[in-house]
Length: 290
Image (cartoon, rainbow, N blue to C red):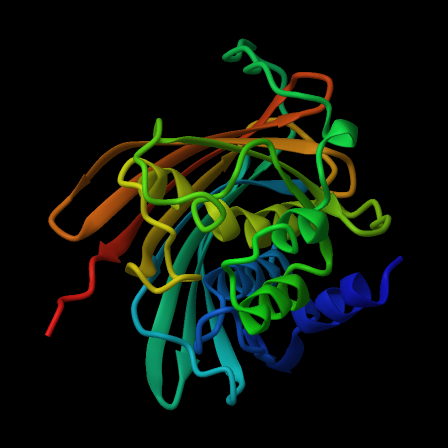
């Protein structure tokens, strides 16, 4: 296991303060606030620790309310909303400086047999044929070195490989609002299914709004031509998967308007199983010229 992945797992290992109350540490992201994927992942850890081990996460719905302060801990309060025969529901409120910054509702279910179908996996190149994240990022001379180093630092726990140029790599000309990345953790994980859900939740917030930027030829927050932030985030976990094995994150944007952009995505395993569906809306504003 890489040192960066161990550091991320330590970050996600919350401290239990009291019954259904947990505390997590923070660290900065590419922008000067807590990375939204970190908060969502920590909230799923908090929810999952109050759920019987035979119930597995099948959905989450979250709202980002305020920017997180990377210099302060985050307290996660868990409400046990329902414990049924098949389903368990939890609500988590993340608090900093006495105010909620994030809310999450998550549902867990016992394993069941039932009807089974799925959308086909889209075509994508083998991840082994693609440049690594570091190779890709260091190949753009227009990116300031400090931005490149910050990106590499915040993504060091994950091997994330773009199929095509990301928005900040080749911008200025609108492209199809569609983006693909392969990802897996930089090291093997334990067999705990919740851990793999948590890591996929963490990564899912890294690139989902890229397709919004592509449609308008914008490079994004890395080059300062838009201001962005996640507003809400939803995930449905359809089939078991491992976050330490290659996953294809196929993303598109059906709409942007009113200073907001919508991203939709599917995550497939390398052998073609549809594992996760994801939807996110975010603020995407063009800075005003003075």
